[in-house]
Image (cartoon, rainbow, N blue to C red; front, side, top):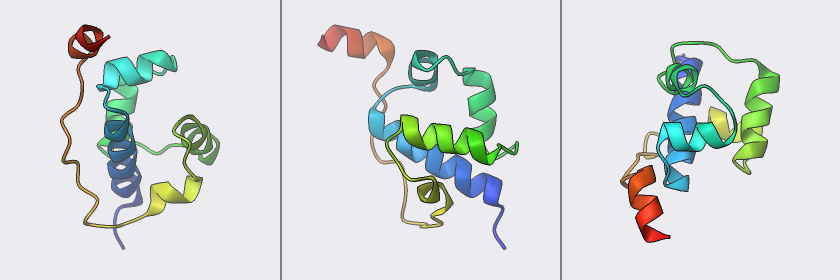
Length: 89
């Protein structure tokens, strides 16, 4: 069995990259600790089902989306740093 923490973390990172924002900017908007969330994205810590459900709601995803073990789900896009995003505005 694959490490579920890594699967959840990879999917969380994938969903965050779809927003185009770096960790600090994205998680800062939701008052989540970027260092803690980096550990979640690396699959280093367990998260509660309730916390995962809250993340799903923030990202407009279903909680089951975090358990998708699709190896084709790779991050191709570069993130938009906060400076670049501000320049675009």
